[in-house]
Amino acid sequence: MVSRTTEFLTLISFALASTLAIGQNCYQSTVLSPSPFMGNNGEIFKLSDGSVWEVKYEYEYMYEYSPSLIICPSRSKLIIGKKSLNVQAISGSSKRQSAPSSATTGGKWEVFEETSLQGSITGTVQMGRIFKTTSGNIYEVTGLTLQLVLELQPDVLVLRNGDTYKLVVKGFDEPLICRKLN
Image (tube, rainbow, N blue to C red):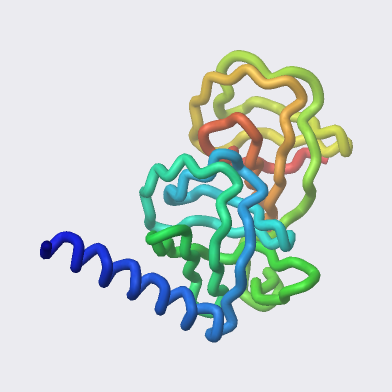
């Protein structure tokens, strides 16, 4: 009996928290990419309103495909089902200017471009590897990484923080820290 009562109270508190969240400058959205959304630290995701976010200090292993969520920019939180995750805004959408720009935050990541990598990517990706995007930009991997991949012209979200670039490549386990060569 205690477990049913606890479950009921959890559902009521979540419903109440969701209702309060909507009233506190929060809004509903859907994760467009990546798919599946994992909810793990460092994961960068894009919402249906065009905003880009990063999961901070969480490891949920959710495996959610295009989940609906409630996002609270002023509290740096998102709610998916019964879970609440810490997030950080990287870039806001044109509809909601909730995410700070790099000019006002002293060096946060901002969206530089959304494009694809040219050709097929096979084998090991490690420091020193050169990538060219279909938009013509050329990047060299400077951060420590070791990934084994096989992707054909994968989509990439390029983030910039000063002279450092982060390539979030579809099909890769983690973002690539790079410098722009052209």
